[in-house]
Length: 282
Image (cartoon, rainbow, N blue to C red):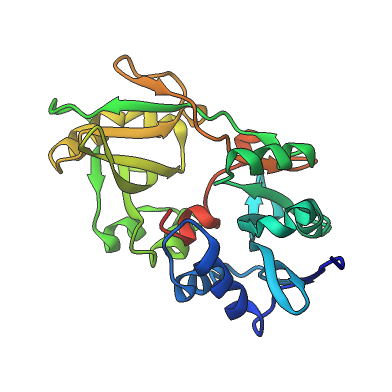
């Protein structure tokens, strides 16, 4: 077997890569769905949509990539989020070369938020670090708290958020699988993004993003009351973004840990905005 060719994915070859993912990825998405997710554009200079591998002209593997510019601790930082790493068994031995084509791009912090166990091991070989994987499950109770309120109306959300927070809201409001609200009071607001889910046969809220952990903790009971009367029985949020663990919460573990690679940022700087977590209905 001749050594396959690895090349960046551009507009002309994105449909070909998307068709490959539709055929070979376990997720039931159409090629159109893959193209739509990979084309999510957040203002970053996009060098490519990832990299694909060819053997005798046929696509035999690839890795998708989403790019975004973020402001972290007052500094502009560029991120590359790896997604949809898929290689045919016949060419699995070239997988690391494919991954190195992505992470060999200079000037980026790299993340992967849905690695399989095998992919996670490969990323750690490339010096990726694992994020804490525990998820706190908090029961939502019908006890009305004395402080705070929850805002779910789109126009009101945008009005109460600061400029930078409102930009995040606008950048993510078009994805139909994401739900937005703010909780707090007066100038004390926390933007929350979540996805509806199921846990033990009941509706739950899987928290994707919170803008302020302290405010979130302060008004968690208010949020739980709101969710309860929406028929949502539990709130699920990663332990690493919480301060004090709520009394009735239980921590679930055993998940494939999400990964990141950075020379200057630490785990507290990593969230799931502008990534596959929001661009795809995972």
